[in-house]
Length: 367
Image 1 (cartoon, rainbow, N blue to C red):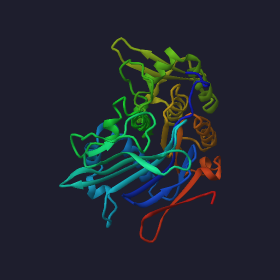
Image 2: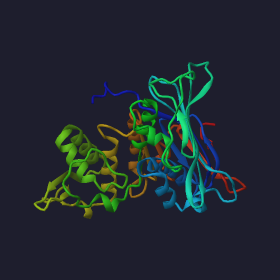
Image 3: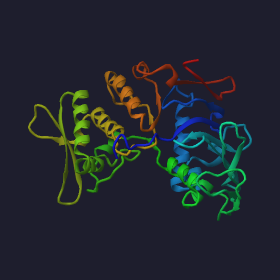
Image 4: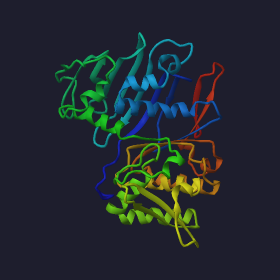
């Protein structure tokens, strides 16, 4: 797909979180294409980051699995507070009104239950908001069609279990295109938990289009780019050489046993070395460049503390590259690095802190 053929990506404009660990009641308004969280240790930057991961993973593998994996209500819900965990986003698709998605999850006898879930938008700029999908504990109704209106018939569609997310279930049917679009939007998120040790592994040869959240398929994605987008891959290597001058080239070789070897050749040496023996910073920069130059970029990319393993002089350039890539996918970044922050615009920065009750609050750097 060419740059001209790409539609304006869907973007999150608002996020509200209740009862999620230290996020007792937090709002993020007027989110920019690139939003960066800044704050001291313990201010819950990683918790905000995990909200996106939790939502994305629930759509991919189911609510029960990810609720359990995070310690259930005992560890997930804000201490000392009653009520469900609430995640609410407002997002905008090109050519459609803003949509509000509300998800509230609580626990019954150790099992998660979707106590409330709805989708809402308004007809025209002056219209009254109305819900075109609404569910409680597996029971609810929805309006089908490309552009639901309030007068349309709502059809009862029960789910098999109260722990199922209605958007994830209904979004698999063609007669609910707006629900399907939200489902595709969320399942397309890339929330990065990049592990440098994983990027230098030797996976089985298998071209893959998108970098995994841990980066363990880096060699597979480079193999895919070499076969389908060689000029884009060469651009990645050129930028890498500019960032890490001693790197001459990056090689991917298929071995007789079916594994892929990712190798990095440093100048002036004659032979490349296995990626697992290369600099952690070099591998991480390579992985970020592959992610930022994805031919079919994710609609949302989350990156936690990009400064780890990278030299400070690389961070302003990485911030600029993230901003450039945000034309095709929204970025959400957490950082402690002043070098990264110095390359940002004030409206892109949100500062987190704990109030006297130990709950997280946020303010915009732009005021």
